[in-house]
Image (spheres, rainbow, N blue to C red):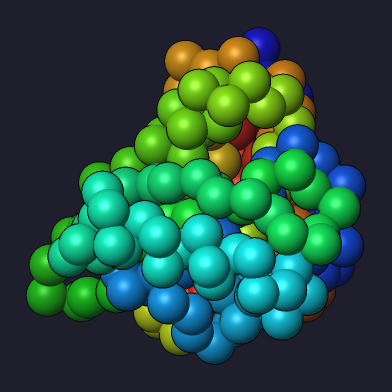
Length: 173
Ligand code: ADP
């Protein structure tokens, strides 16, 4: 069974096998956690993303999918890039958000990663309400069939940490 933890902080500083990036489809960098990962990890990560675009992912990475690169100078060994759905009130995109977590864990299994850190995918610029994003994240990781032993949700800010702690406690009931 996968052990779930929450932590407040900056995911670029976390020493786990793999950290997950809330990337955009281009894989060529963005703001938020994506910008922070590229800044802290150095140019090797962007070079690996460009290589993916030039080879296996000419049209970019679709929402709900995940792909791994080097982590450059980061303490983690790998960055797993996933693309969250943009939140929509008109359309329920929860299955795509759940897929981000499931596919990231599948990629982690392929790498042999045993410890993985996630940010709150889609809950920044992509507008997903934090409480709902947290419930989907926690539920999907708990239900996933994976060899990953520890998942750490690394949350930027007290509100995000509280939302994930609440989602975890709802699960325990
Ligand atoms: P998205 O485009 O998927 O919404 P964002 O990067 O805009 O992705 O935001 C996702 C979440 O990551 C937000 O809650 C944001 O506050 C948080 N975040 C931003 N920078 C970091 C960081 N360095 N470490 C952890 N979480 C971060």
